[in-house]
Length: 255
Length: 374
Image (cartoon, rainbow over all chains, first blue to last red; front, side, top):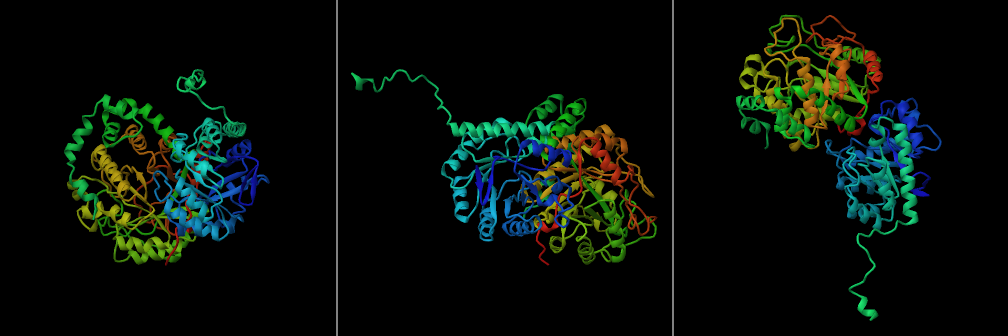
């Protein structure tokens, strides 16, 4: 069972709500994925009338927790303010910290993210920061009190898969908090791979939302994440490229 | 201080034009096959040589847009605050020499218009004026934005170019985006179309996006008025401007519009005609060239065209627009800037978007995300 802050999750697949052709289809897809943590952009929901907001109404299921995100803010100060608004309107301490001052590639700002994490952790938030696959930054975030880290697999929305895999492996090896691979996961096989190398969870949005059949794709990702996790727990057989039968360098010991 | 003027001055209009018209089928194929396109590729995509590839371009443009923006179209409405104007512009209904009674909305009238626009479902409003610095000035804008921003999540503005400090005073009141169209990048032709008024200063207008970038505006919109000059050459300069801005002011977002000259009271016939086929080619070329830029289509375009291109690269649309101050509620008969073509209501356009399997998005920003510091 995955534990983040005070919450536990059966499902290791986190999903998003953007880019769907309708909120009804989004709901159906999220349900098919069995995801229990769904991220919502604050800029897309009506925080003044949260009980009438169409998107939020669709996510009103007992097994689903909302993960509000701060997409659109450009620095730590704005992020902290947005997180406080989210906490008040949506009654949750969970916050996905997204500070990408670059609106073109939505690259996360490591400096502002670290600052905001320090402050939000002090304010009692369960912080899940979206970051580059930077192992040192992950350790610094841990020290700052983060509840998880969310390194990117490749640029957000790119569907390019785990381009950062070497760094993800270091992060997973060193981390004391859950590692959630976020951004760039384009196919169920990418999600399975992330789980096989030991990620605690993955977050997938574009690959599901933009598929011609988001409901089937939600289910496909669910199965892939489960298979990947099962394989990780069962321990993958090591890879070998050559035969190991003869031992020309050490056979002299047996002579 | 870096400025686009220096980049712009290193280009020669006639050479650029010749280079676009000399692009070949091979150049187009090369541009289509790459994954990252540069300005030379953009030239190929807008060239006559790309015309036979329009279907391929449309498919590619749709695919790329879907990946970035999903199955969504954003909706916004213009709110004309004033049609007072001291400029003479040969193509515009608000031109100073168009001797028609002028109107600038007062606070009470603004709120009436706000109510009418809100009742149509809008949450994103674009404030528009002419250029009348003695009455419609920064203080007027400040008051108007402060008045309007509690009602809308996103307030954008399309008014006369301002100084950096002026933009900086407006953003804390809730100003999210500013659109400033160069109209044409042809310096001599620009002079002809803007013989009088502050707008006749080509360089001041050209450097407006630099001032906006320095003022750290969240989003800015670029474009030319299609019909004044060769649209391919003008669009190249727009793309050049965009590329420069993205590199220089990397924290801002960009959008592009492609208004075609429309009839208005006292109007000018377009010097250059652009067919629907060519406009679609331009939309697809922008999308293939730049996967992240927002592309906006207004009610200037016909129902048929809007029905068919909304999934081919566009990211935002207006609907049910009035192009005159007071047009929604206060005084529907005042002087309008131009006649719109697609007169369907926002609800009809939202239904159209849904019927094509896309979701109309009314809200994609919240002005609480940028801290108000005033």
